[in-house]
Length: 120
Image (cartoon, rainbow, N blue to C red; front, side):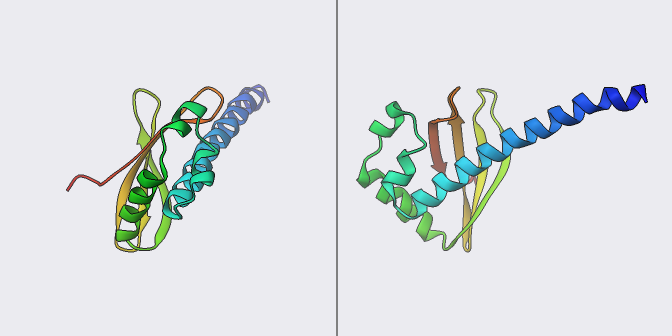
């Protein structure tokens, strides 16, 4: 019985951490979908005010065009985290993939977002 009680806090911690990862995945997914759709309002709603000011419609259009060259958007898969806390994802499309790197601030807002071609 003592062993079971000791495991309960660990199980709760695992569920809480899984919920955090799910939140980051959801944020990255919705933002990447908004980039693909060339929807600047949806893209910037999850950004910090400082990052949102740096996004232009022209830049977003170019990024959306890049994504469309890869075909239909299929979704994201988390591939890891960086030492600075940034999250790495693979954005899958019907004709290839792109790498998405996203960093969140303490309040959960996106403070960094990049899309780059995978290395070949």
